[in-house]
Length: 250
Length: 296
Image (cartoon, one colour):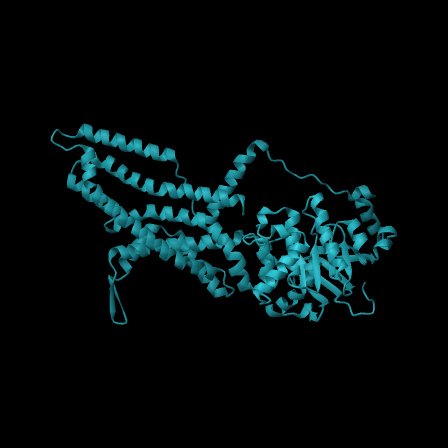
């Protein structure tokens, strides 16, 4: 369980981001304690995915600050610094984005071998263990094209975990899946959270958010409208906008 | 109030289902042609049949026109076949060398187009487009008449016979087209692959060599083979600048025979040779394309 006195592992202050003339994030601030699970909900186009991409520097921010572990993300200037950050923060995408020319096992092994420069045998053992953990031990030699969406997504999670990150970001990881396979992916994330991994999820799975999150953030129009423990936010939302959104999807 | 926020879930798909198979097929073809940067060769078995028919008719006409003392048309063709075959082998040799040289330099040019240095990128782009859009024959003439007949490097004199110059002339457009094929393949890789690699802390160079290019190779193969087939057919251009390849030899054979009736049969004979060589390549290209389209 998160310790509220500990320094947050992710700390965002008044973050702004525009694409051209469109300001998608208009002053976001949030803290995520180590081991915490945070869910970000909100209508499409409210900047949720951009928020996650800013945290691991895939998208540069315009103003404000982001601190992750020992990195000041907003002031990273060289590729080297950005790459160092990404060893600590890993992201899983909605569309899995596995490397289609590599098997499931190779997908998991590549980054530790070529980025972390770890010995192949060690990485292999760890990768096999990770695939087993996500329930895909039997599929290690399958290519992404031969796997279902849910299986691909679990390989993608294993691939991120192989980097031994401090923080995992999940960007609508179940949005592209059919209902039966959503569960298998959510179970994997549930286990991770139980093991104390710091997780930030952008999700439309409200039941999952309610069950798993320590804090839920509701964003709309580039700002955080409301945040709080799931029991409070889902059952006694304060803002009208939150209430309107929840009444539509619950 | 909530109803004001209702989201419109209409998929907006107004496509006529009847048109879908044809549309998918055409879209694939257009995409392939855009990647290849040149129209896709579509050789079919029927085309071969038509060629054969023309050849047979040509032979019939020649036979009918032949005087009593002339040897039969087939015997005449057979007599010249070894020489023509030697010419054809020369065509193939030119196509191999031009393809190899063009591919090597084309890949370099393609990579230069991806450079982060603006001048390099710009120069590579200009070079590519100049050679891609210049007529092949003009390039060939440039090489024939602007290159010296020999070059001296460090005291070693290397002769440049006509066929070498012709091969270089053909290698230039091949180079530009290969560069374009590479660029097209790179652009066809979803940007999500770059993003995904970046999120795993791969450097740009690692991403390029380990993730993007291996995926490109597969996509480049069909347009590259198509380009080869087009090049093979273009090697006969070398006859205009006097290289002793199949077309030149055919013309010589015809003038030696001095029977105008042989024209149709001889030239359709040459066409048949090229068809027999290029047809399997074209079919194979189409098959590879279909296979890659399914499991990319």
